[in-house]
Structure formats: C-alpha cells, structure tokens
Image 1 (cartoon, rainbow, N blue to C red):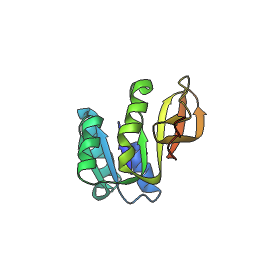
Image 2: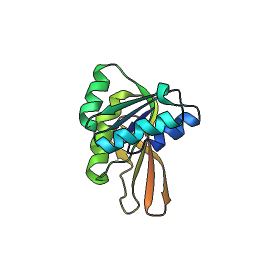
Image 3: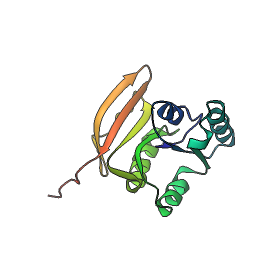
Image 4: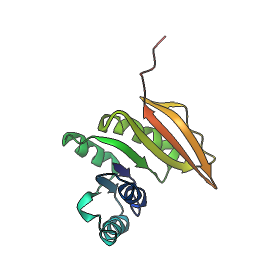
Length: 143
C-alpha cells in the first residue's frame, strides 16, 4: 500500500496491522519522516515499511520509474482541494486495475464523483473530516 502525505504513518501502519504486506510512506517533512520511521520500528513493522523523504510529486515519478504498483493508496494532503485532484491523477499509473485510493479531506470540501480515471465509490463524514473512496473506473466517453 502507498501512504502519501504520510504524517505519522498511522494509516499505513494500521493497514499493515490488518494484513497489508508492506507499505511505502511518503512525506517531505523531516519531523514526519522521523515519526514514520519511529512508529514503524516501535510496532515491529520496520521490515515492511519503506519511508520516502520527498515531495509527493517527485516520489510518484520515482516510484513509477521503479515499476512499483499498489492495490491501495491513502492521501491526506495539507491543502486538499488543489492537491487531491492532482495527486489522484498523478498516482493513477501506480495503482493496479480496480485499485482503491482513499482520500481524507475537510468535511466542507465536496469532491466530484469523477477525477481523471477515478470514480468515487463511497464517502463518509466523521466530525470535521470527510473520507472519499475512489476506484479506478472506465474512462468517460467523449461526446
């Protein structure tokens, strides 16, 4: 699984605790990188976690060049509205067919049903947070 804007790494580490084989955590903040590494180690997941210290855009390009593919991706970008659409589109080639991308954003931000090749399949609100779940879908037909 892939965790973009990883922060503490909590989403990826939770996924590993629930059966994900491995995770790549991406963040550019030094404190976040340190927290991801420390948290993985404290849970005994260091062999299943790779932490990438890089801006997300650059990391996606690097992962694509390396031939990486993921079934599941999470993102919690700091400025969700602009970053979500770009991140979903940029990451699409890294996700396997029928892969899932879970995006956390502000409750007041409503995302479109389609973003690039992604189709929103579910959406849940928790307090001030909204979680939108996207799956790679069929391309829209041009009229």
